[in-house]
Image (cartoon, rainbow, N blue to C red; front, side, top):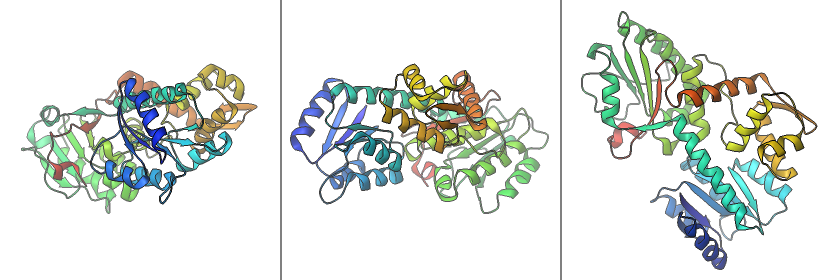
Length: 355
């Protein structure tokens, strides 16, 4: 993985970077939040490991900036605070994980193993596709049965398809427009291109309603293709989009599914309620504060209820488990043939995929 390591202690930076490189990671170091932002502006990273307390600009400000501008980067806090405070800080910042100082390198390695598992989960949610592959998908329908919906940032290079600006100011007009255009064309293909900017502007709920409106207007045998810039979306955003393709209703999507430990805990709760220590033991989570950290994420997402003496799935938690099971079977393509995909780097023109 490509890792950006940020700390104001040069000796710490050097020692930890040597260990990370020895494990096969590509590592860039930065002595401050400002230097880290400069590197993020010109390079792509999978993981940010950052101290919280640094002079001038704090790690807290850095993490918030990363979530806003590079939401696909997994953020991990390195902190000298007591673990209870570390967990609270990580939860408040919506960090992927935290590592209290001082630590053994095994803690870093296990956290990065979780990050690699999360990146693999992202591939199941949203696999990369080239322009040629998407053109072949669209050519499964005759030209008059192809529709491309995209923000008004320039035409997609897909000749022979009807193109329409995606205007969420009038979402109710999308369904009738699609329905009238595709009536009597059962093999229709509709491409929704690069909705990431729309998601950030109007929110997942509004975009989800628009997607449901469009999908329900497509003939039953037709397909909807949703293409995104994966680097511009968090794993939670990808879950929201993939959930909407699967569910086809405006139900709220399950928050809190990002993170392999959280998903493992949900799956363990499928067999019935249990307590915190048993759940920790069965999912490989060590430490009281660590189990509380994961449970708070799941509780905030409405997926579990109760306290550490009795933890149970909610109705939304059961729906999330059904979604995960379907995702394990189908990956980025739903059983009906709809597809969530990421634009392969360099294969689409910038105006087509950037918003």
